[in-house]
Image (spheres, rainbow, N blue to C red):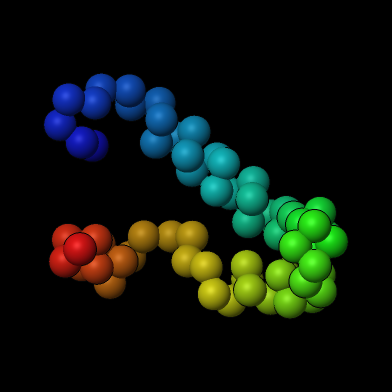
Length: 66
């Protein structure tokens, strides 16, 4: 956790939010495809294949680099 930040519940809240979003990708794609004027299938595929939702060692290494 970042120095000076002591709300330990935030980690659980962020994980719950991520898990809810991942479980509802089809609904999210349907909701935003029309306003974005992009096919629902494209939005869903993008969210499923191009967005990384879990931090692994490669992600952490990238964060440290930048």
